[in-house]
Structures are given as structure tokens and as C-alpha cells.
Length: 348
Image 1 (spheres, rainbow, N blue to C red):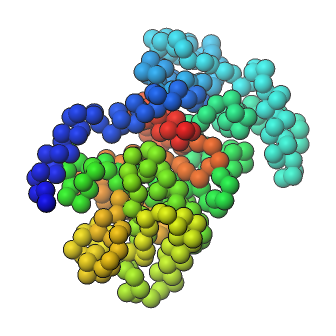
Image 2 (image 1 turned 30 degrees about the horizontal axis):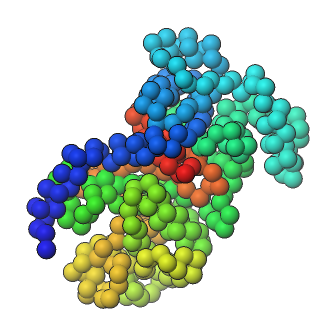
Image 3 (image 1 turned 90 degrees about the vertical axis):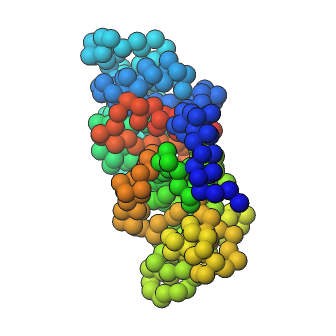
């Protein structure tokens, strides 16, 4: 069996040979040639990211905003190849307004309200996505999460059979490696979006995260449904929620390697797994970790980031019928490029 130092050296070799995990994601996106809309042309970081994505062929970019103002405020930017659309003057505004009206008239929206709402860049971008004119959407650099997700929930809506939108974080191990993370990366969910879950919603989060782990991170998912109990070692309503979610997830995705409920050490440490969950093919070897609620997830990923030295990429949205992602308002252009690349992979 390879020693810990052998694993560390192997991980270092993988990084040196194939570049960082982010670069790997970007390379995958380049091969897909997806069209992604960036809704915040008024933000210089977004404009810079649009230029980088276009130059590096990460994706074809549609940038929303007034073209004259964008070029005036970004005189040094090379916008060659970037498609700029002003929602207010777009010839498709009427078509998108009609689409929005049909989607929201049952909720009391009038045709006039729909036309006005469709002028909003984030709603316009979501309508482009709904209409199939782009493959994915990224926003949130200068707008709140609520302003980004509201059009998603109202226009894009959840994927068929999914009861809750969720998010995940790709956690990249530090350069020195981690003996419990031989692939150099694991996935945490939900750490940034949905504060409360029903058992079915948590099951949907687990299934979606497993799919994301495979499609985005290239992992063969082994999913641990986390709790403060392992296989019935404690009795509590919070434990019961995870047990029910585990049962539902197994019924919905019977081929998925998924186990619960598991304490974190039983999920990731083989020696502990042998004591607490003997015979499990997931316990001791998990690479996808589903936290029981947002509080636990958010605390967990920040501990891994600050004390464990992991790089946290995300949160990345999942569960929408089409890919839509929210940015942190403190994001850098490189973060936006990464979000575009991930959104392109989700579109595939």
C-alpha cells in the first residue's frame, strides 16, 4: 500500500502534469464551445472576465448592458468577439416579455409589468436562457443572491423531479496533500444556498451533488449523508431526517454509492469506518459529503478552508432546469471565469 508521502508526491505530480484543477475545468469547457450570458456589463470585473473567457475560448460570451457605456468605462478592454446586448433596446425584448408574461400571468403579472420586468438585465438573461438563446447564466458580482436567484426560480425553475435548488463547493486539497483525499478534491453540499431541507429535498441535493462531482470534478461519487449519528447510534428528529433522506435518495438513485447516516470521521477515516459502519462501501472512503443543513455545511467548509488549507470553489448552484450561477460580490475576474467554465460544463 502506498505511504502517505507517496500519495503526496503523486498528487504533486498530477498537478504539475495537468495544471491546477481550475485549469482542468477550463480546458473541459473550451471543448464544449457553450454560450454563456454575463448579466452585469456595468461591472469592470465582469467585463474583464468576458474578455478573458473570449480570448481563452472558455465560452462564447454575451455581455448585457449599454454598449456605449461599457466601452467608455473599459477603454483598455479588448472586447473583440464579445457579443454585447442592451436589454432595453434589444429587438427581442418583446418576445422575451411575452415569454415572461406567459410564465407569470397565473401569478397576477400583467403584460405591461412583464415588458418592464424583462428590461432588467438579470431577468433578460434568464429569459434568454429559457428561450434557448444561451446555454447558461452567471450573475451576482454587483447584485444580491436574491436578485440573481429570483429570476432563476421564476423563469428557469427546478429540473424535473427535483424539489429543491441547492449548491455545492468543490474543495481542493492543499499542495501538501491530505491522506484522506487521494484525488486531491472532495465535494461539500449544501454550504451556501438552502437554509432548510425536507427529507426529499436533502435527497435531491445528494443526488444532484453526486452528479456535479462526476461532471465537474471528475470524481466517481461516494456519497456520505452526514449527521452526529452513525447508523442509528443516536436517536433524534435531526437524525431521523437524514435517515429518511438517505432512504429516498437510494430509492431515486439505486445505482449511486450512497450511505447514511454517518458521522464525518466514519465517512472519511477507514479505521473509524471499520468500527462504526463495517461492510459499507462508502464509509471511510467518501468523497461527496452532504451536510444536514446550511449551518453545518457553511461552518464545515470554512473550517476546512481556514484550518485545513483547502481551496473552496463555489458555492455552485444545482437543481435548476438550466445552469444558472451566482457570484460573490467580492469576486475577482478569475472567479468569474471559473464560474463561466463550470456553468458551461453544467450545460453539457
